[in-house]
Length: 150
Image 1: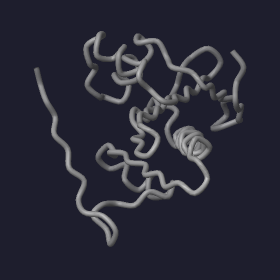
Image 2: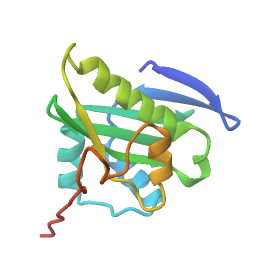
Image 3: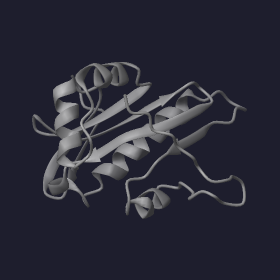
């Protein structure tokens, strides 16, 4: 598989790939940032239903990822995860830029697309630097969420 981008970041040569990681790698990344690891069946379905996914590697090791789900008008950026030892090296910014660029390229001329995301606590400033707006604001009400446990 050919890298879409390779950058020297934080003393590491990080390569970025348009690819969906396997479920084991996905679970390892979630655990590395202290997020809940979902059941295998749910994770496989979620990954399979991604519109687009970017994975960052340091040689053969996956160090970060992010993905997009959506319907062509509304998109949600999810699972932006960077292993703690690689944070602060512009890897997350590069992933967000690739995801947004992909959405922009998929949007027809004259159309309007909305991109949402839910930030991890304390990471809101990172997304504001990427051009996202905190809700509520003058154009939108509060974002709401409902979580279902089975």
